[in-house]
Length: 145
Image 1 (tube, rainbow, N blue to C red):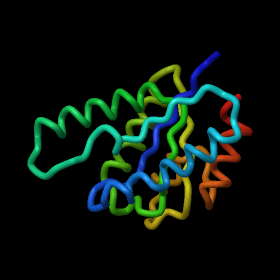
Image 2: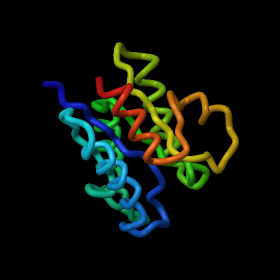
Image 3: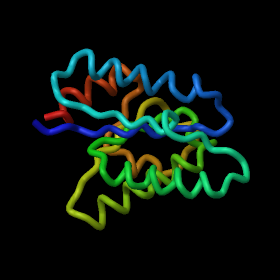
């Protein structure tokens, strides 16, 4: 049985650990409580916390995140604070590059309304829903097949 890998992308900088994890754990629970598929979630805050002027850790965590993105089937993006998250923009760019330059297709599901109006963000999202519940329902019914 295939194990689906879902990466959660969203703002981390300036947020405490609980704020970084709340929406991530909520969508994981919404999906795993209904789906009978084998799913592995990757929540970056569980593994790394970025610290100012910590170049060694930043290089390690960046490399780790890029490898996790490359290996993912689905990326769920919190769009509500995307204007304040350069890392999320970069993650979307990496997924776009992977999708264009390889035989792989990583589905990007956006959640919420973007707090910035830029066409590259909307063009990088495969599907967008307003709520975590709607996003979970979409992922279960259309992507975990």
